[in-house]
Length: 237
Ligand code: 13P
Image (cartoon, rainbow, N blue to C red; front, side, top):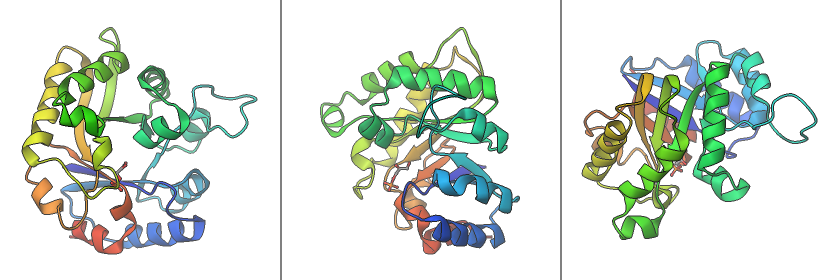
């Protein structure tokens, strides 16, 4: 079974999110896929309460928890709403809010103690890719993010090359496979209840079939295409 995570980023307002979630909730999903919706914070609680047959994810949460932290999203809020997943370390959060792998590592611990399944994003920029240094970059990230001494529950890692996000460019299937295998191999001595590797970056209706051929890949993290009904229909029974 493959995870299909719909990262709606800030594309949809409350009304649009509600309408698209309604469409998803009514749809008969092919059992080979497990859809998870990551709407904006404003919509998250409402959608989670309204559409009981869908799974939802937060797009982020903060390090601080309850208290005087204006504008932040506490993990307590996510937990109280019974939301099961949270994206951590998305490249856009890294780019616009200065999140780094040390912060990702701390958030992963918070998710673990809160029983929230983390969706951790890793990936290289274009220069690193061109220099053929993707593996060493990912290794550095994983080294900082994960701790051998900890026991992790289910963890989803999304390999999202920065240069593939929103660009229409995608790595070859072989490149994705090599990185997915590399991540699994690197983490083989770490303790996970379940470890899933996803791919994200310009996944759309045109390349979905091709990308779906990648062996041992556990799903996709999809941005702009995930707000299109025509894309969502690919997962219809
Ligand atoms: P796009 O699918 O729009 O390239 O975005 C990918 C992404 O960032 C998903 O989290």
